[in-house]
Image (tube, rainbow, N blue to C red; front, side, top):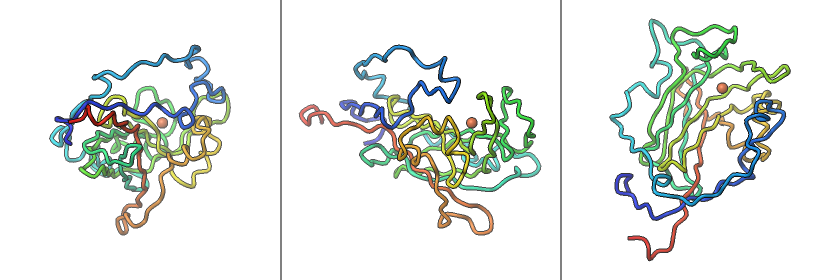
Length: 243
Ligand SMILES: [Fe+2]
C-alpha cells in the first residue's frame, strides 16, 4: 500500500520500557534536571499520530546522502571514508519505504559545525556534517561520509563520547518517528559512556552498534558499516474494519 492511500485503521505497539533508556539516569548528569518527575499519561492514538509527512524523491537533492560531496569546496573532507547502509524495518520485519532519514555528525576530529560547539578541534572547511535520504521500496538506505571523531563533553569528569552519528527516522507516521545514535563496533568508549550506558538492555545497546561489512566496501576507497533500524510496528485491528 502506498503512503498516500494508506489505511489508517491500525494502531502502534506501545514503547517497550525495557529497551529504551530511562529518562532519569544520574550518571548522565543533565538527565537529573530534565527528566519528568511524574508518570506519563497514556492517551489513545488519533489520526494525526497515525499519519505523517509524505516525502517524495524530488524533495531531496542528488548529493544529500553524500557527506563527502554535499559541503565540499575545493578538496574533499579529511578522514576515514565510510559507507553507512542498512534497512528500516518495523517490529514485524516489514520494510518501510519512503522513510526520510536525516543524519548529523561531528567531523573526523570530533568537532560539529555548530555555534554551540566550543571544542578546540578544528572545523573542516569541506565538511558540513549533515545528510538525508529516503528509503527505497525495500526499506534500504545508504550514506557516504567520514567517520566522526570522539569528543569530550561536560559531565563532571573526563567524559568522551564514542564516535557516533545522530539519526532521525520518520517512518510512516509520527508515532513511528525515532531519534537515536549509531555507534561503531570495537569502540572502547561505548562501555564507559554514560549516555550509551543509560540503555541498560544489552541487546538494545548492541542494536545501536554498526557492524563492519567489507562485502559492501568500495575497493581501495570506502569501508562499509551496516546499521539496520527497527521502528515501532503496526498492530492490526480486527479484519472486519479493514477494506
Ligand atoms: Fe553527538
